[in-house]
Amino acid sequence: MKRSSRWILGAALLVISHAATSADALCAKPSTGNGQVKAVIASIETLKKALSAEQRAALDRPFVRESAIKWSNLPVGIVPRAGLRLGDLDEKQEHAARRVAAAALSACGLKMLDEIRIADNYLKNVDTRKIGWDGGNYYMSVLGTPSEKKPWMLQIGGHHVAYNFTFNGGKDGATPMFFGSEPIHFNMGDTEYEPLATQSGAMSKLAQAIAKHPEAKLSGTFTDVVKGVVVVFVEGQMPKGGTDTGFPMSYPEGTTDRGILYGALAPDEQALVRAALESYASLPGAAITQSLVAAYESPEALANTYVGYSGQPDLAARGSYVRIDGPRIWMELVVQPAVADNKQLHYHALWRDKQSDYGGEIGAK
Amino acid sequence: MNRVASWLTLLYAAAGSLALAHKAPNSFVKLEFLAHTVRAEVLVPESELAFATAAERATEPFADYLQRHLSAETPQGAAWTLVVRSVANTTYLGHAYLSAQVELTPPPGASVRELVLLDDAVTHEVRNHVVLVLATDTATPEVLGALQYPARRLNVQR
Image 1 (cartoon, each protein chain N blue to C red):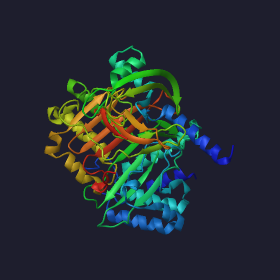
Image 2: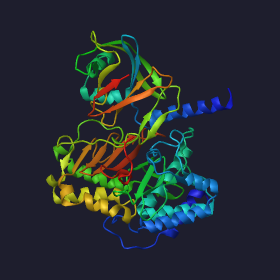
Image 3: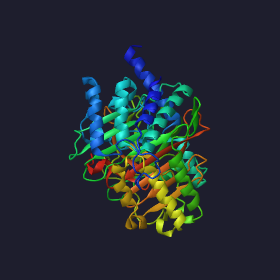
Image 4: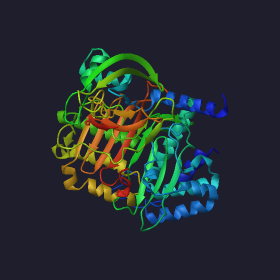
């Protein structure tokens, strides 16, 4: 059995029933640990026992800015990642690594990770350029010492996923989170996949609903997410950057060109705003994300939350873009041309928290 | 070609081929500080420029577009002279770019090593677009700063 297939099978075995919370209501079956720090720590300890000394050294990294910002949305051939490469693990180690992911993520967050990795395997088959497409090219890192009281981070990521969870930070730490999908929809074997179906569906419904309000249309053109990573290409040198070197970000202020205020929407449109933000926020386990959702959906926060779109609200064309922009929340989804076949499309999505990226534990350079 | 050089060539090629289709390409302004002027190479990706000029419905030459969107001034606000010497098509790490050779000259008495660069080429329209400003008068180019909408001013001191 292929490793990625084993990883998927592990998902089915590890999912157990928990009462769904409001934060991950879109996830039918929350995962093993549901983001509880104790469960995540226990799963990491089990993983470490299964690893060689060299692998443990790769997994453990210091909890400093340089490590924390080392995530990207580019393939590893361009922006090499640090950490434990999931594609190098034997079966026992892979099950242990999967338990870490299952402890930290909701069921839908885990499913999305699985399907995005499978999409990379799909790309590897259709695009033979040496770019690094590979479901094995996903990495796990533990930044700092796992603790129930002191701050530390768990990172899981590769080409189209960047999960950055900070535990015990000064602030809630579910972000920054990047996820994307190419292809948007594909078949592998007898199975159909659409990794971002929930998130793109929710954002598209929102965009289509608000498109009838002229003030919801954002000015300008969008060819990628706005607050993502930046790559510095200098001729004759390897590309630099491609990581979150721009953190901390600045955000739009004032009342113009941010879209339409939540309060100006009809109740059914407001419900679509909440559904869209929950579709992102339900990817981490509930313990990681529920306080953030509560903050985003407080009456005070919603009163100052804007939603805007550009391009086609149904997300059927490149340049289509949807954004939720509140006192803390920053969620984007953009439609780009695909890499393997530029007549096709692919998604990039980003969730940042204006106050608590990296749990508020990482400062400016 | 030795093994390391061969490996690097492969990586550069991979970077270029990826850049071609994946990450929306950025602009670059490379500054070289001379005795009396600053020589700049301005690289603007054609794909992103097309979005920007489509929005403006402009059909002007690229040099004229640059004159409208790129300038420099002293920290006190006195304008520098900007001359676009030449424009060429080029491929930069897999993307089609327009490359302009630009000369920036401070007003009499002003330091050539202290300026405010004002640039909203492409960024006036493309919200995710970033202009990276680099100094190339060192052995390794140094990133001086980045401009993204709505920011269009960068203080430069060398």
